[in-house]
Image (tube, rainbow, N blue to C red; front, top):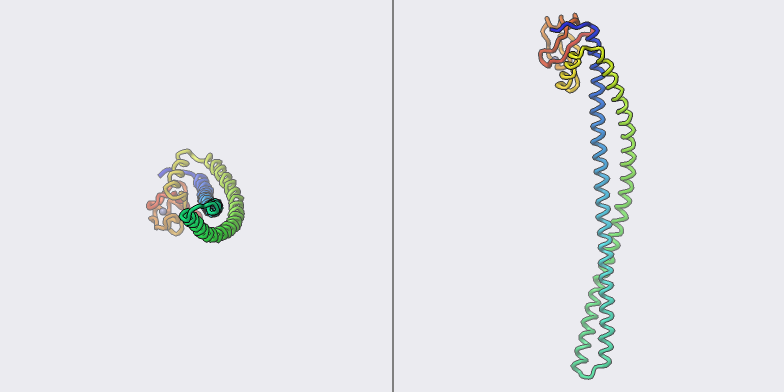
Length: 239
Ligand SMILES: [Zn+2]
């Protein structure tokens, strides 16, 4: 058992107070970072959906244009067939061009029906885009506000973290480096809790009983005593 002064123990307790805040703040900041990533992901997802809807709308518009062009071509054909009809000399030719006109008219009817369907589709896509645009803007606004809030909050937390890190550094200067190393090692092993109080022979780190003799030593406070179960550094403050 290493002899240390009461002052060392007090320093270790202060070091622990700072460490507890550091661990807490780091966890908070980590959580905030995850939340930020999640929010950006959500926004991106909506953005992609909106893009997809816009694409579908453009496709529907392009399909309409194609059909309209085809109708135009067929109209020209009908005109030409009608011209030919006026100049036919034989009945055979007449029947042939008449059939041509007839076929083209049928084709045109079918295309016009198809065009109407595409117009409906167009309208539907337009509504979908409008709706998803509205939804997207609402969500964007909501997410950006939320991001600003957490950004502000985490800025405060980051400043506080820096403050505690500096404070811990200053406190550590008063300690023997080997004691400091020991503190850091135990803290790392125990999620940031390295120095704990003992109350009624119970280690408040792992809540196990410590032997009475050890309890007396801890109460004396002039040697460095670790919990036999969790290895944390023990101290005693009369309550
Ligand atoms: Zn313990």
